[in-house]
Structures are given as structure tokens and as C-alpha cells.
Image (tube, rainbow, N blue to C red):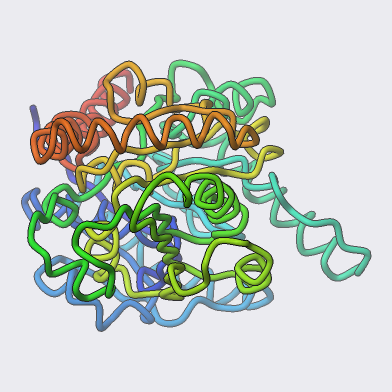
Length: 392
């Protein structure tokens, strides 16, 4: 495959521990496998001390300007545009945040370069209504600019078919220029750990059964169901523990209301990304659910599900977008409101772990390597971008 000259730009803060930051950091890691001379990366200066960026061709743009600072945004564009012209960059890849002014200016003043939106989303879904006039004005202009960028994009990749369908239906994307590329994970970072170290660090007995969640908004995305399942199974499963990695404002109230013993509930709070594999390694079964109103609009392509699989942990998750869990025997897609079903599937996977042992974990990790790795999705994107360039 011909080596592309790629530019990558985002205003995402890579030092955060949320989905976009993790996703973009892993994408940048995968870009490091390419010839550094053919890849220019443009980031806000808040990312300067990130060790992942040390040997890459990164241009730090200063702090992201406020929306009203139009001249600063234009200077940001001029710096990027000068660099991509000097390097004869063929395609500028962008993970959009609010007010994607730079990508819009690039397409207006340098229309020859191809623009690819990475991990596109229905950005308005889940937005809370505001009565403040300033908020409404902010959202109006943000939507105006974002829609203009989507309509001018030469390539768009999305993680979920529901997102692709909606963008096309609204005239924000074209079928032939839009491709489904799932979220991915770093399989060299997330891999099975068969030692006792993770459980010693979390402080759970080595022979215990640990029902676990790791991610943002735990009360909405797994902790509630886990605690209800733990209540049901406590009398039949010895040494049952619950481990919740992450935090939201409702979590402590949720824990106070459960009848499951408080001493067997482990709450780590929010942790650095580098510590997440150790926590997952201490779990037996992992869970990932999602807000129903968002699933109906956007589908679900949970990155944490893939992290769990790569760690060799069976996953119980929402049925939407996770049919492959059952097909590939990686876990169970369920109705997240049916605690009885979740409990049954939990018991089933505990028995399978007891029967299959480390072989099960190794099989799950290998599936992640073969299908869910950053290397796989980078190749998919390279093929997609090349096909766009060939069409002119």
C-alpha cells in the first residue's frame, strides 16, 4: 500500500481519562508505526508533557482559544495550513470537538487537501436543554459550523451503524464516503495477567469472585446492575466481591442503599489510564451498560467492552452492538434491565471460568488481537483513505 502523507489534528485533551482522550491517544500510538516524516500531528499545548508524543512529529499550537477569539483561531489554521502545504500532506484527519473552526478553514482555503473526520458522532445526542440565551447562541453557532465541516468532509468514519444511518439521513454524510470502523484497544497494554499481583493490590482474596466495572458514570453504566446481581448471588457464591473503578455523584448513595456487605464493595474512584489494566485483571466477570436513550439514537460501541475482552475477561453488556459477544463466545449480550437474566449469565460464565481456566482468557485476548487492536483499525483507515484519494 502506498504510504500516505497524513496530518492529524484535534483539540481533545489527551491527558484526560475519558473515552475520546483514550481513543485518540491510542490512535496516535498507532500512527507512530508509520514513517514519522509522513505524519504531522497538531495538538493543543496542554498535551506537551505526554510521554507518548516524545518521538513523534508533533506541533503544539498553544492553548485552545476561547470561541470569541477569531483571530487566534485563524492563526491556528495558518500554522497548520503552512505545515501541511510544506509537507505536501494529502489528508488531514480530525477528531472534532466543539467549534471545529480549523477544519472548516482548511476546506475553505485549501480545498485540494482531503479532510477525514475520525470517530464521528451525533454530537447533539444527550445534550441538556438550557434556557440561557448565551447557551442557546453558543449551541446554534457550534451546530452551524460542525454541520458545515461534516458536509465538506471527504471521508467520515463512525463506530456504529446507527450513527452512519442518521448522518446520511440528515444529509451530513454520503454513503460512499462513510465507513464503519469500530473503537479499538491497545492489546499490548490490555492483556491477561495470571499473577496474584492485581488482587493483592486491590486487596481481594485470591480465590474470590469479583464482579467488576471500569469506566465513567458507573451508576448509569454498570454499578447498579452489578450490586443487584451481587445481592442475588451472595447466598450461593462464596467470596463474592464487587469492584467499581470510576466515580460519579450518585455512586456513594447507591452503595449505601444496597444490602450487599459494604466491606466487600471496593471503590477505587477515578484512576489514571495506566492503572486500569491492573484493576481489570483483578476482576472475574466484567460489565458494561449504557443509557437507553443514547443507545436508541446512536447505538453502542463501548471501548471498555473491548478492554475487558483483551484482558481475557468475559463481558456482560447491552445487546445493541454486542451480538458478537454471543457469536464468538466472549460474553453475553443482555437486557440491561433484566437482573434475573444478568444473574443467570453471570453464574454461567463463572462456571465456564472454573472449567476452562486460563485457556478462556487466552482465547479472548487472541480475539482482541485479531479483531479489535489499534493495528487492525489503522489498516482499515489507511485502506479507506487511499480509496478516497483514488476517487479524486
